[in-house]
Amino acid sequence: MKIICSRNQAAGTADRMIYGHFLEHFHRQIYGGVYDPYSSFADEDGFREDVLSALRRIRAPIVRWPGGCFVSAYNWKYGVGKNRIATYDKAWRVEESNRFGTDEFIKLCRKIGSEPYICTNAGTGTAEEMSDWVEYCNLREMGRYAKARIANGYPEPHRVRYWSIGNENWGGHEIGAKDARAWGALVREAAKMMLRVDPTIELSAAALADTDWNMELLRAAGQYLDRISLHGYWGNTENGLVPDDYKTVILHTGEDISGGIDRVRATLTALGLEKKIRIAYDEWNLRGWYHPNLMDIGNRSALRGETESFYRDEVIGQRDKNDINSIYTMADAVFSASFLNTCLRNCDIIDTACFSPAVNTRGAIFTHKNGIVLRPQYFVFDLYTRRLKDTVLKTWAEDAPTISGQAWGTRKTVDTVDAVITCDDNEYAVAAVNKDPAAEQELFFRFLEETPREMRVHTLNGPSPDAYNDIDRTRVGVAISAWRPFEGRVTLPPHSVNVIELK
Ligand code: AHR
Image (tube, rainbow, N blue to C red; front, side):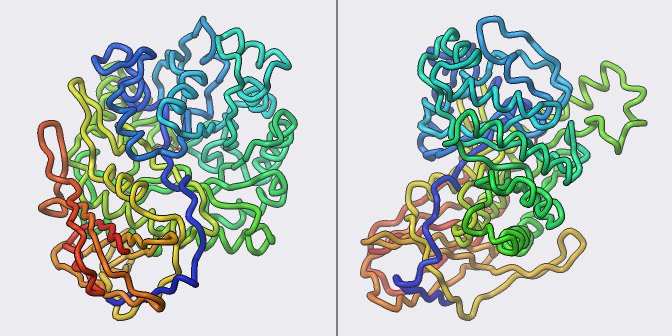
């Protein structure tokens, strides 16, 4: 494949907020993940220092919290102050200790140098509760909530700039789901109250790649919003054990990602909002989380006879399957890099993205008693946040090979090589993914202005597409070549993610 670019033809500037992460009160993400006061890795505030330093290394720019489905029945007021009351989490059917609340979340963000991004409860919650949360976080001292924050030991406002109203309130699975008309009205009223507390905050609202939903939402509340939130998961695991195979995964790296973005772009453009409102892809990952037997419409009858052992083993116990590290392979790395490349190509309309989640469940970092495991997708963030530049150039491809096959019951064709060229005033950094499970791919470059003279290549890979890391087992990692003369081409190994630095 040949890729052509010109320094004078930029697609735009990538916002580093696309390298964000998400943490939910689910399974071991918070308790036993980032926060574990009894761990030998715990710092003075109960946070796992090994996890914090891994998050610092990938320069997590923003972290979305506390959910996900969890937030749609979450009352933030139980999670602040000295007397934390344990509550029953109706989203995930477990007890929530509330030991980790708003102040701990802000502390986490400060420790890793991230922006806090709070998702509000638009399920059982009210516009007033959402705006009270903004008061607690952002007002210096006026009102009862700012005073409560001060009394809780935080005299300075938390200055939370990024907020999203609701989580997936379009879906029947969500507590407090709404129809589009009701959703537009709630978002409008919540936004008005939140902005009356702090007009400097930036707001997103739960949406999806559905024109009708977005039209209702944007007509009702577009004037108050800075973003709309999209979520995406593309892969599954059979019985929580057998992940989709590599070939199936890569067939989801094309239209299945970009199609939804194009639909939202069309709606925003139709409403003349494409310069005002951007997309926050604030939950994305290849694999959906595994949490079977959660009471929803589908299996009500099966749960009618639920016993304690069923609840323990088939509802809660099953979630431990998310911890099986062999599920997370080079397929996850290749998919994650393809997703981020899509965000870079759409940097004019996507300025935020949150990998879901950062820690445990399907996350990039896995914690265990004696340390952490860095899963393949972790290194994609390592490479992209540390090596890529901010200017994204438009590119033209010639002789681009493709891969075709069946996935989700339809025939799909995707590019074998996904390459994005970024640059700054001095250097280029090319993010190039070779999705081919077995064959190398030659990538030829044509720079319309000066051609770089030197090249260095960072290659994330493992011995096979199914290679994975685990406790006492490292098969996937990054190899860095030395600087060498650039001959206008590079060889991409099979099933690999590469960053090619050129100067
Ligand atoms: O499976 C995890 C859930 O996926 C998140 O809580 C929700 O936002 C999404 O549907």
